Amino acid sequence: MILHICKASLFVCVNGGADEDIARAILSKKPPGCGYTGTSSVTVTDLNSGYTTEPSYTVQFARATPTPVYIAVNLKRGFSVPSTATGDVQAAIISAFNGRDGGTRARIASLLFASRYYAPIAALGSWVQIVEITKGIAANPAGFTLKMQADQIPTIEAANITVAIA
Image (cartoon, rainbow, N blue to C red):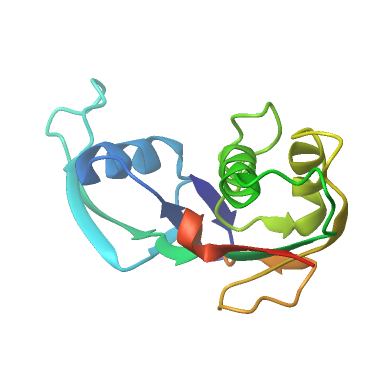
C-alpha cells in the first residue's frame, strides 16, 4: 500500500485485498480533517468503542493498474551458450522481479533498474556475457530505468522478456 499525504487529501493506491478491509485500514490511519481521493468508494463504520452511535464514513482509494513490463536482454554468442539460455534468462528475471532472489521486488510507484537483473543472469553460469539489458512498458524497450506511477503495479511474464544472442 502506498500512502501519499497532501495538504488537503489522501491518495492511497493498493494491489489486492478486500475493499472493506482496505477502507477500514485507511480509516484507522488517516489523520482527521484530511479528505480522500480515489476511484473506489467504500462505506465503513468506525467501530471505536468510544462512540455511543458508531459513525459511518465513505472511504476512497485507488486500485493499482497492472502494467506489463518488457525486458530485452542481449547476450554475446559463445560456444558454451546452452540451448536453454532463453528460458533460463527469463526464469532468472522473473525470480528477481518478484524478489525471490533476496533482492527488492518490483512495486507500485517504484523506479525499476535494468541493472537489477545483471547479477541473477550472470549467476546462470560462466557462459553468460551480457551486452545490454533494457526495459520499458512497450515491446522493444530502450530504457535503463522505468518509473512506475503511483497507480501502476508492474507485472512480468516470460513472453515479455526477449533474449537475443548475437
